Length: 215
Length: 134
Image (tube, rainbow over all chains, first blue to last red; front, side):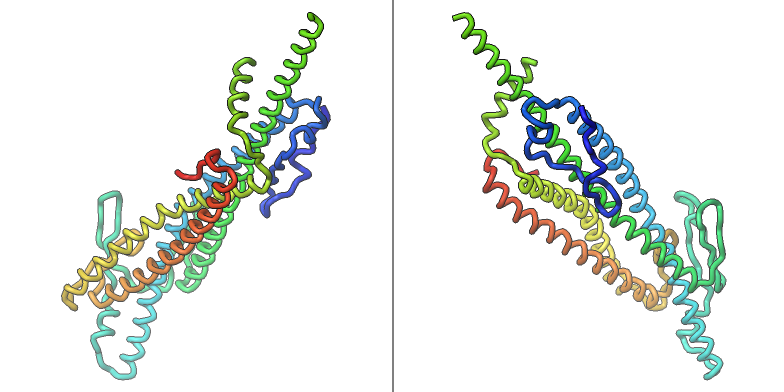
């Protein structure tokens, strides 16, 4: 059996996942009515196993990203909130310099921000946040870096964008892989049925020959 | 071997129409849209609930005094905000949920439309030999 050119020579999707061929005519594919089916069937099984593996890892990837995106978004919301507060305070300060009077707005912005945050599961504590220009972002790998608030926002936005694009491609790939899996399964079924039919025809031909001999 | 024969013979009686590559592609697309819709439905439901909660919250907040401090959840922690500030934040959150809802709803609708088209075409060709309902 010559090694089938499978799946290297075929079309690929943008991430290089090979496209499964659709076998419209089994006889043609295996090279004539007496072609071997075991080899191609084994190739199909291998391809299905590969697609299954990709399906598994992509599903995991998707889940990971779906967990990660809300986290980034929450962090971004919080930093944006801090920035808003800071901007308002700045404005209030300017106003104070100009007008030397305390209107209600500036007073609200000048009060330190009190938060109730989760210390541990079901355990909350109160904390007052001093006004600050910098926040610390956890970058992973046990590293935390301090950022100016606008920089932090830029970084978080780009991370969020990257994660969302990545999720989109993961879902695309996943849909692609599932499609290829179906095609390969259909191919397998077709070839299998074709082989069964061929065996039956051969057997009835044999029987007919035998009967002819007997008579 | 014998089992295999019986199965194939039975199958053959129901296997009247040849499945072409185009048919296969349409079936694949249908499956893809169906899966996509399934994935969106959960998220859509979640967003709807969130929107409802925010709407309830909005009526609730209207009733509170202006000089009252409310605890508003942002991310994992609660901010102690004066009521007017909380209302502003609430509006931001409501807008964001609404826009997400609209976006997802449009995608879901598109899926449904595509599936309907394919259903008509595939049922016309395969009749009872194919089942495209859940």
